Image (cartoon, rainbow, N blue to C red):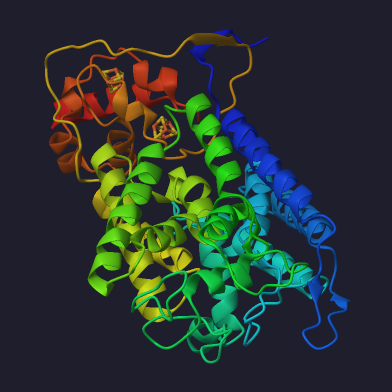
Amino acid sequence: MSKVKEYSAMTKDKLMLYTFVALVIIAAITSAMWFGVTAKDPMTQAPIGMDYGVTLILSCVIAVGVAVGVDVLLHKVAADSPLNIMSAAVFGMIVALCYSYGEPSMRAVEVLPLLAPQSFMYVALITLVGMVLFKKLQGLKGRKYVNPAAAAKLLVLAFVGIFTVLIPSDHLSTGMLGVPSLAGPIGYEVISGNGMAPFGFYIYGCFGNPSLTITGATQADIVNTLLLQKFHGWAGGASSIAVILVGIALFAICRRYIKWRITVAYLATTALVALAFAFAFGDPDPLLRVMFHLFIGSSIFLAFFMATDPATTPLTYLGQIIFGVGLAILTLLIQTYMGFFGGSILALVVMNLTSPFLDKVGKLKPTPEKKTPKLPKAKQFAIVKTTDCIRCGACMRVCCHKLSPILIKEAFDKKDVNKLAKLQADLCDGCGHCTFVCPARIDLRNSILRAKAMLRQQ
Ligand code: SF4
Ligand code: SF4
């Protein structure tokens, strides 16, 4: 029997399990809210497509099934493909929850099918592409550069040949039902800058319950729609309040390992920039624009559950804050000037590509002085399961000499002596805190002590 070892209680599998449970709770709330609601034929008003609630449940089952199935299959055919069922299940849930469902009254063209059963095929396709190309193949490069769910969805959109042409014009842009441009004044009552219906009316017509007849919308209707219940767009963001509450609970449980600073920076910047746009465009009620950018489903769900993906985001605190700020600014620009309201997904992939550079920003300055950090509670493990680094950054915060253990290990694996010297690996005193907190159970201490020995031999 293997010797009992002591580590912090958090493991990669546990992190994935907590995230999976959080996503299931969000899916259950949305399904309950959507249960009994169907789209209507605009001419006959007869129900079309499948019940929204049932659609979401089946989409989640399909996406999780495909993701786990691909994971198991690849593990069987390729010996070096690790079995990571919980991570695959989380990925499947994210794909299902970042898919757009529900038909708004001003839909002009169908970018991806909004209604079941046609939507099921695309949910399965995005999951398949994401698992094979962006989780497994990208993982072979040693680190993931782009968020697998976001990249797979964008690739499928591009593949069907309509990405650049159709997305900005997927809603009517003329007539009373038309969608006002955000690059002009918007309000509840006033006709917006481009002569369209009031923006408040658009929000209600787009995201409101299709079972209701819409003649107008009060401020209370808009707040209720954006905060509590949307019936179109990303399923994961249908209830902003649910996302915020479940997200905060997850962050509190996994605070050392989840990059919640990205979410805070993203939401704060979104609010500030939207407010600046509202004043610049002369909106009668600046809060309408702020609420729209904060609580549209693609924004709120992405802020809590996709932008914080540890593998594709910066390791340092400052890098994470810059990442969140950049993500918010890019998203607002895409939504305002391209008319692509789900633009946060494009902004996320662009910002992911900056992570290797942002990893270098805000690294703590190594010091020979020793300061013992506050460590999480210890737990004994009889079996220690080692996995790949998830880039949570936890090891960077517990080194008593402010070293960057994961970066030193990477430099050591590449035998990059210059980098090891720059990272001051020689200051390591072998305390082992970095190994203790690592949820992937990587023996950082051992690698860093060997790196130190390598430096001495130079
Ligand atoms: S083992 Fe070395 S690198 Fe790891 S926390 Fe201790 S001093 Fe820092
Ligand atoms: S090596 Fe560091 S960044 Fe990677 S999983 Fe372990 S603690 Fe997180």
